[in-house]
Image 1: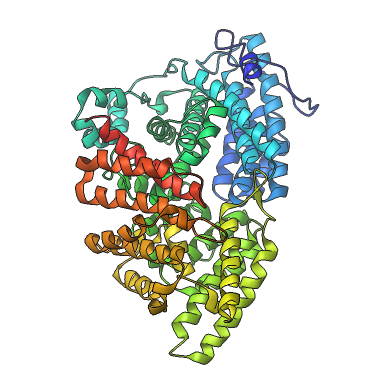
Image 2: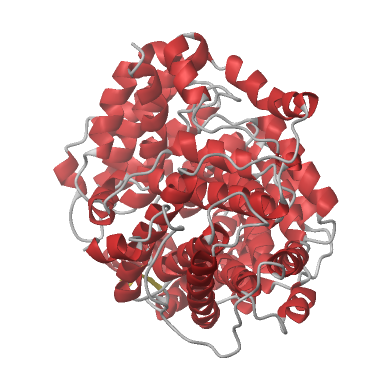
Length: 640
């Protein structure tokens, strides 16, 4: 499968990075002379800076007459950002076309540079700058392909990922570029933060040999002393290779076979180090590296509860101050961009300041990229859900159906379950208002399935849509069996379920915990006669709320109720089967909170049981938590 990739790379670094034929011809593309390259790069980088400052129109204007590979890559970046932020089919098609043109142009320029052997503007081998452009475009094209609805495009994307990986690996192997001058004081200052955080990490302190190996994963270079083209190559290769390593390290256990198809594995620790190194660049590479890091620490890491101490250099520990400093730098550099406002709101939410996060998201903003506007509204809706502001949640998700086309089924489901909760909250105190909420909930429940399957991933329905569709069918069946109206057929609070899947309890305060426990107590007197899978949901989520409140003994009692259930009784048509493997993960979380690294081996045993579980609903989402947790405990068990 990968012989073609090897052939494409046949030129290798001896005669210049990469090799192989151009894939397309474009008469509007003209190869640059050695003297023109720096000017073209500068113009393209300025245009990409406009993108990061939410001036898409200005960037398009600045790039429209450019014919260089740098210009075409910049146009591809615009398309990629719009596609990856919004997941909309028409935008992804346009992005793919732009990126294909950028790849073809870069390949032509790379071969010309190798042939002419000019390198006056860079200390890298001739053509390396265009090999990087090709790899960047190929990597972005692969991501767009994975996000597409076609399984064929997705499989092609994995092949592109493989090729980009090999090319970036070769660029990474090139010795560090020459520097114009070395200022020891500047280098010392630039390295101080990373050295301070590494020496405070218990994973370093307990094993000096391991510490030395890990500290040398990425060499730190003062980019202020480098030529502009070298900064472009150095920061770009670190960004792209770092991103690849991190993304691959996050693939959950249920997708393990995918790794064997691709033929390589991620390395979260090295990937994060490369991203931090890239973040030092005062260009678009540095900005995207910071954006990637903030998303990693604000999203992927936050789904897990088994993490090393903050600032641990394991690729998982949350370097709080470093993230704050990086974000502050971006807000200052790109003051007009709502994208960085969104990241600030996410950071506030991560630290439990949900009201502050919503206040930031309410700041009037009209971003040129409407995908950012949709992301801000989605973030506001999720944070409002964590605060139990159900009317705000319903309003926000229904508004989202007007802003983008990602998953109207999921948006309607969120709105429906919010009205279910409003009905329950008012059922006794205000029956008239409760009836209004019940009608709205039932109308949305009936409407949601009409949107199912319209958004697909690798030719498969979205896992959360499959989950929502099954839940609705389950409620309808329960209502028929019990001869009650639809809203009375709903089981354990579906809002609390969604809070668990988004790990909202990690961001709640005591007032939020109290509201969640009340929601979980709805018609508790009937729960003992309910189906076993509903009782398992109630016990599991109650356990999670109690754990986050610090009441671990009570949490364990509820969790043991789930662990005692025969997993086969949770299987079958319309049943919730996800609670059994999730309970194993949750037991590991409690062990970690009780014993810390000393209990890493026992934690690992429970996590491995969850990781090896047979296929179940939402196994990818739960699997992300398991994978991240294993990454942490493995660091400690390896040292034992």
